[in-house]
Image 1 (cartoon, rainbow, N blue to C red):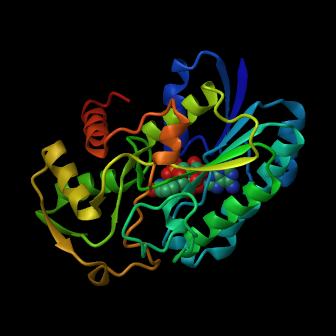
Image 2 (image 1 turned 90 degrees about the horizontal axis):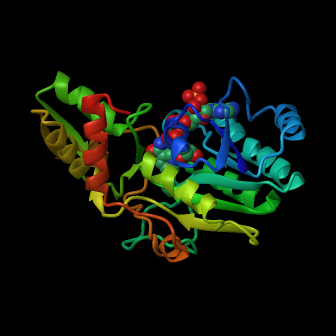
Length: 291
Ligand SMILES: NC(=O)c1ccc[n+]([C@@H]2O[C@H](COP(=O)([O-])OP(=O)(O)OC[C@H]3O[C@@H](n4cnc5c(N)ncnc54)[C@H](OP(=O)(O)O)[C@@H]3O)[C@@H](O)[C@H]2O)c1
């Protein structure tokens, strides 16, 4: 039986892992969020690892407020980079495998074809920069680890674009959504399953640190995504295409951040569902309250 520590387990990804736990009877999960294990507290991490042996640690914790991070720099860096260093060191000291989650926002979005793992990152936001620093900490300090870069996460749990669109769609007759940022939405439940399947299939053995891209399949804009959300949910709200320059945000975002999934697919044992199939599933969950 593998013992798995889930950090940040009240977030979208952590909640999806909890929801899947019963399907992995060979795993014993220990769930923590900031109240049980504040990752900025190095002594608390050391204490927990000294008390319990974890085979695997899946780090779902992060500072994910992209715009807020532009002002809240110290805390964003502390959670997304310094805390990851603490975790990587502790995992190495106890020979635990670390699964760390990163983002498509490590890229500046100037590409016109899907980013591969060997493409040079160049974040154009402070959030992206802190996440890249977190990746570097894993590369430097972990013994055995995978870093999974993902994109545009949503879930029936937590706050995300899908839920915001559904709320606004019910409040308004029309709304504008940016059409010039292209990427791929990812259902956090699909990512959770990919992570647990990688662990279950022993795909993270005998390697130092391996970097993979994982998102749902397909390529769309936020505008296309919003249209699909309204259509799938049966919400009568007109979605209008607008340009990023007409929707000023504090942080820059990449115009193109599609991730190439060839590497993780060739590793085997991981499903990469089409974005619309997963969206349909989540809208159904939200409608029925069947989580
Ligand atoms: N959301 C996206 O669109 C997206 C896109 C690409 C990549 N990612 C990455 O995917 C991963 C999972 O994202 P998510 O959307 O599931 O994030 P999330 O919903 O924001 O969850 C993150 C969790 O971490 C917790 N946390 C914050 N500071 C902590 C600390 N010091 N110690 C322990 N826990 C702490 C948060 O608690 P509080 O809520 O109390 O702060 C929250 O429960 C992250 O690494 C993120 O960077 C996300």
